[in-house]
Length: 275
Image (tube, rainbow, N blue to C red; front, side, top):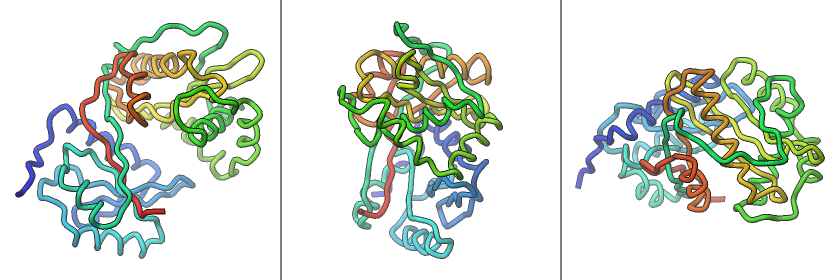
């Protein structure tokens, strides 16, 4: 059966944003039905189905993409919206790739709101601010620990990650902040310093909120929701963004975002070689 690849309007515009977002730091290469984003930065990228393509993707197309990645010395990775290419999830699994799936959520930027959190300061940080790098290290700790439960990892673990940040990545983070490509917010505790962080990437009327993370020792205080609301409000007021989107790591995280105004409109998939 040939799948219906006419994407719902609710996700078609998000798919176009997801195609545009990597381009400032990549060289896009057309490989059959895919656009392969070859990174010019320390951050690795991936391939996506080319926007506007309607024909189903085949195993032969994956063969060609695998060869193109090997030729350019980049890892094979694919990201896409399920509702745009519903045939691809089964195809990549049969091809031997590891598939991960996340709720794709959206909200009107001006409608995202959360309860204030006492005892912390939430602020947007600029290039050169030490909190920008502390926020990156906070995300490293949070995503290494995983989940949403309170845990022992805190400021000491954050500072250990901070001391190991690659200088090239540091330069890249500051460069994107200077160019306005990534806008970062942090939550600071008067004693512990940065305990949560997140960012958004604006492109015209859309922005993706990314890497909202809280140190395990500071979880269950409402920091993720408060930071998400701050990022959405800043995107709306300062960058002219109308719609914000994000991919929730799991159901528990999706519930956090639902409480501040997001609704699931689709599923975001990613695939890469096993191991």
